[in-house]
Length: 293
Image 1: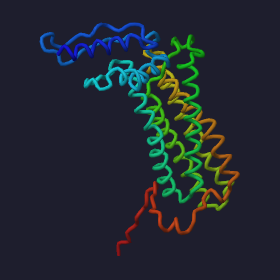
Image 2: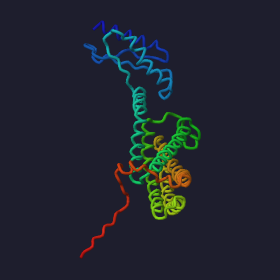
Image 3: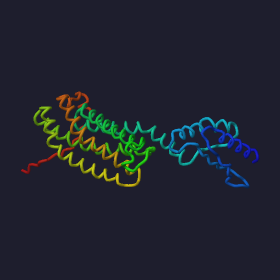
Image 4: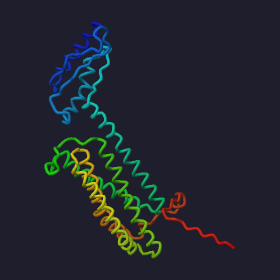
């Protein structure tokens, strides 16, 4: 037991001498008679949200602690809220590209099966990425950099790692709702007239008011979150409201019709072999008539 205590003391000395560490409390055993674990509280010189604190935690895990316990036969774990937040951020950050790829890939396949096109679903994926990227940018500028934070009653600080995922999921669902609604009407006009440019204009004219009204309601609802006191709720309110505003005006009313008008008939092009292999999905109700003799 004395040997273990000596190893713990050496570890304590090494931690206290590490750059970026302000203080380390003395080791506290779980059982003074027969200790099996010790607890030490490490206080860094920087705030929990500072990047230097993240670098310190990683340096302790990768260098300082392995060097201090090399061959000592003891296990050392760094816990606490700061270390947990770093671990959660790294975990979600590593899986965020996979999450984005899965959601965008599945939406691309579904839209391709519904509208029998390659460019239309590809355009929808790109436009959604543009709108969510713009939203992320504003959220970072306001909540992380602190620009205009005084008007909203917030201070600059880190953004919880789960928020970007939630924003993407919610915004993507809302934007795809508007996308499918408008594309369905455009496709109907194209099938009826065969004129790609006119079908875009007619489809936009017949859906613009509904999309604008629905988006305006969502912007007002999400904007009301800014009157709350909790920082995360304010963030969701600004992020969701801005995303819906950008998507329903700049993306859905300008960029999507403009690109479809420029592409013309190529909007609805699909290779024959893919059209034959790909399952067919329909979002329209099929009326069945039975002739009773």
